Image: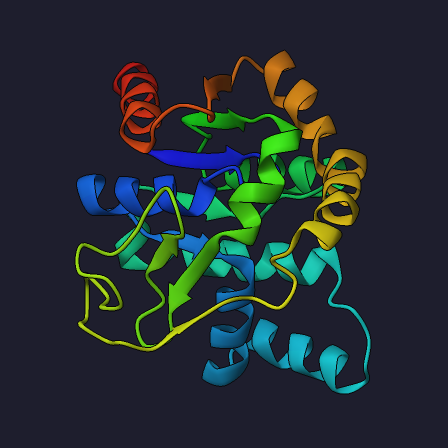
Amino acid sequence: MRLILLGPPGAGKGTQAQRIVEKHGIPQLSTGDMLRAAVTAGTDVGKRAKAVMDAGKLVSDEIVIAIVSERIDAPDCANGFILDGFPRTLVQADATEAMLSGKGLDLSAVVEIRVDDDILADRIAGRYTCGNCGAGYHDENLKPKVEGVCDKCGSTHFKRRPDDNRETVRTRLQAYYKETSPLIGYYHCKGKLHSVDGMGEIDAVTAEIEAILARA
């Protein structure tokens, strides 16, 4: 099962990805995490990425694709994976398709989580994470079972991202619609796109996604 989750900031991709990970036992692959791991491990592509970053430049799509390619060859990806935050552009999507094809692989599904932009501000402003294990919560929609205590690790230390506020939402949405939303049409034309209503209860969204995965 090889998946991509699409949706603007605050759509709930992280929450749903974690549920898929727990149920299906496939890893969630973040390009940021993969990049740091490759640099730390000192792989050939990691060394290339480090040289670029040390020079204060942005890592090219070619290097990122190489890092993704290297990562999905790992044993824990044998049964599939979820791509988190990648691809972001049509160029990256084409490169990802070519890379997977070269391995004899294909995407199982691309799931778009649709939301109302006007509600995103409340979602984003209300979310926070455990400062110890990174588990995600929300002031209204996903509170810890015991107030002030993380459900997963028992920590009482929580934090919020400084850019999780209403003032930054519009800027982030503009970037998403400019760069990433064209992927919706791209994957629709390939017959891979499935859309779910992200405005429902979290469990309802999960059920919609699981129904899609059952058919994928």
